[in-house]
Image (cartoon, rainbow, N blue to C red; front, side, top):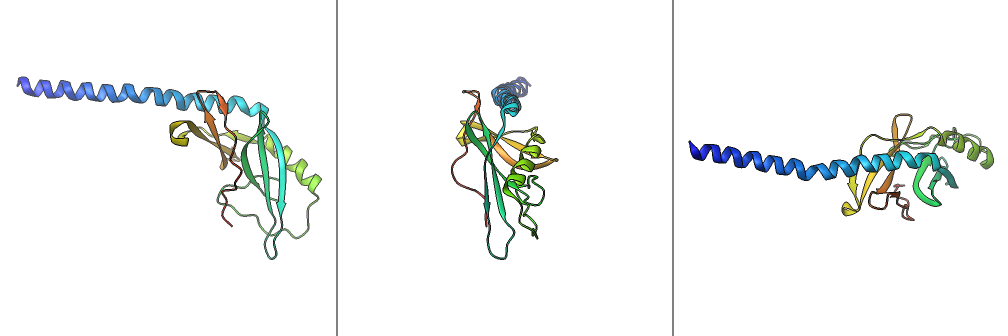
Length: 162
């Protein structure tokens, strides 16, 4: 009987230690969301690039800027200036769009971007990933360094497949 209680007590201590160890991770995840949401007021449109290819709709990318750094590259629907989800492709555009008009449409839609409500560990625990949402769809991701309390700059490559 004494052994059963010892085993039960040991199991309770192990469970309590595991819960306590995961508390800092939950705290950092919540902090990453807070940092990303606070940065939203400073989001600006950076460079807008348009690639045209034969027999394909134009491929438009917009840089999301925060504190002078590119923090995300988002896909843009050239017909509307709205943002495309990660798995969406632009439909064929029959008439070419004026780049200034497209830029103003994208800037207007930039105000509709929001931060998702969840996070995941990124950069081998150095940062947290936070989704960028547009009309209830994930259109990109941010990386948040919780220790430095800032968004990390995006690498110079485009992760989209052709």
